[in-house]
Image 1 (cartoon, helix red, strand yellow):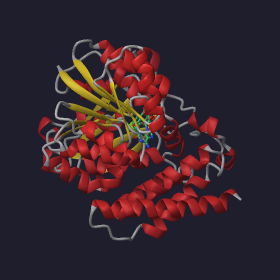
Image 2 (tube, protein in one colour):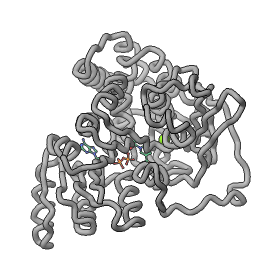
Image 3 (cartoon, protein in one colour):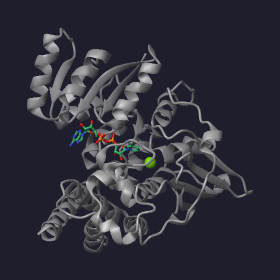
Image 4 (cartoon, protein in one colour):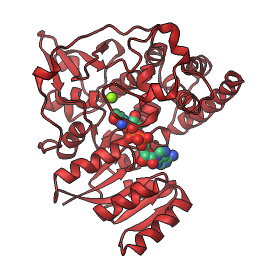
Length: 398
Ligand code: NAD
Ligand code: MG
C-alpha cells in the first residue's frame, strides 16, 4: 500500500484529500497528518486514519494532541515544530506528499519532498511562485514527480500529451503543437459589484465564493483575482510557458477548469463540477482513475457557459501579478510575500479591500528589480517585502 503524507491536513484541501481516501479504502496508508494547531480536527482524523505520525507546528497544541490521543489508546506518534514537517515529507516510507499548507510556510516542507524525490501533489501554489526556477530544477534534478492539484493546472495537465506531462517545467509547448494555455477563472464574488463599492466590501463578503468552498486566504485571493495571477505564474513554471502562451478567461460557471489550444484549431478542455476532490483523486491515482465521490456533471442543469475578458480596473491585483511574471523571479516573490501580509491585514479588518492592491503594487515597485541568485536570496527578499508591506499596512490602517 502506498504511504501518503498530508501537509496541511486540517485545511480545506487536506480535508478533501481525506474524503477521497474514504472513497478508496485500502488504497493508501496515511503515514503522517500535519497541521499548524487545529486540535479537534487532528484528533478526529488521527483516530479515524491512524497515521504513524501527527505533526503540530505549535508546541502546546502538539502536547495536548499527544495526551488526548494517548487517552484514546492511539499508537500515533506526535511531533512538533516546523522541522518535523520536513522530516515527514522526506520520510523514506512516504510515496506521495500532499503539499496543502497555505502560503510561504509550505515552501520548506514541499522542497524537502522534492529533494527526497517523492510524488508531490502540489496545492501550495505560493511555494512554487516564491521559488520558481529553483523549484522546477530541483524537481528535475531529484527525479521527483510533480502533479498539480490546483484545479486549473490539473485540468491543463490532463489536456496535455503524455510526453509533456512527464517533463514538467522543461517541456516544449510549441514543439508539441500547443499554441496557448487558456486559464479560466470565475471572477469571484465581486464580478458584478459596482467598482465604486469595492473599497467597502467586508472580509465576510470576500470569503463567500460563489462556486468553490476554500480556505480564507485563497478565497480573498479569488475575490481580488490575485489567485488567477498566482496561477498565471504557476502555469508559467509548471508548463514552461512564455507569458504570451497563457491567456486568462473569466468563466463564471467554473465548469470548464481550463483548456489547451493546439495549432490545428483544436481546444481540449477538462470539465466537471467545481469540487477539489476531482483533481486530488486524479493526482493520487495518476495515471489510473479512481472514484472521487464527486457528483457527475449534469449539462442540463448547467444550461449555459459564458466567457468574459478580465477587467484590470476591477482586478488590479491580476494585472500586477501578470506584470511581475514578465519582470521575473524577484518581482513574483516580493509580490507574493506582500500579498500574504495584505490579505491577513484585510481579514483582520486593518485595511480595506482595495488597499490589498496598493500594498502589492508598492512591493513590486520597491523589489521588482532586485537580484536573487539563490533560494536563500529569495527567502531574504520575501522577508524584506513582508517588512515593507507591514510598514505600509500600518500607515494605511491609521
Ligand atoms: P486552509 O487555510 O484551509 O488550510 C491551510 C492548512 O495549512 C491548515 O491545515 C493549516 O493548519 C496549515 N498551516 C497554516 N499555516 C501553517 C504554518 N505556518 N505552518 C504549517 N502549517 C500551516 O487552506 P486551503 O484552502 O486548504 O489551501 C491550501 C493551499 O492549497 C493554498 O496554497 C491554496 O492556494 C491551495 N489551493 C486551495 C484550493 C482550495 O480549494 N481550497 C484550491 C487550489 C489551491
Ligand atoms: Mg485554482
